[in-house]
Length: 303
Image (cartoon, rainbow, N blue to C red; front, side):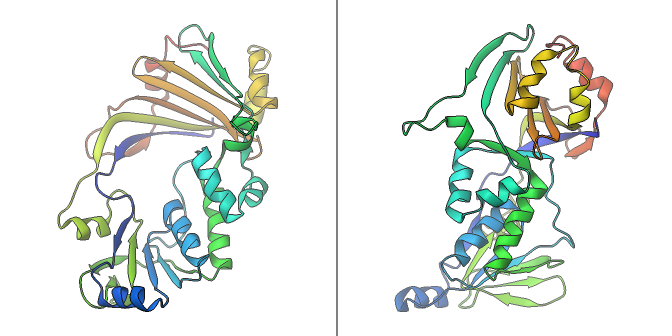
């Protein structure tokens, strides 16, 4: 196991993306005249970059402001469910995603948490006769996902600015703008907040700070090299399913579940163990205590 960590799961109440500019005279005039709107997006995560690509594809000038010096999407693996793949297909980016190591899930299996018995298997067919999992579900590394989006955004002419921390937002003037930590002001007809669960844009729109709401869940996350999984084949021959057929496995249990699936062209496996949150209130992420994690799942399927 290369690394394991525990992550508190929270949800942001308010807007995932907070849009401003509706009160801008420039915005209204542009709508009336049919002229081009300028777009400022705060945050260069997956959501902000997808928004930037969508805007740039309609020839809108877009600036993306990211406070970090480097683009480092947190997390190891991420699922690509049908709704995400539809967007990526529309962008024409699925070939690039596969080239970057995205894995197509060929089958989805659900196991009993205690006995390991298979409860359900879903290869499935959609209404058009396509294999549901094979063509409409996948997994990838988050950092690869972000790189593909950055490359496409830049190809479309999006101006991505790093070390551009937004300190002030003015949404209700005739000329909306954001002000950076260095004092620079950047104007836009539309300002989009894609700046995470502690969004400054959301605070400006709501008029008060809305703290994220803990879900009560904690996720242990780990990445495992293929070579280590292969070493377990002698004891657990059923692992051939994830090694050779790109299956996603899920164990459902009381107040917890476990997911295991391949990423990075099947060379790395991502494991997520979801259980009740026991981190201190002010701690969102910590290195995992392996013994504690094993204790929580000691009565589960030994695989």
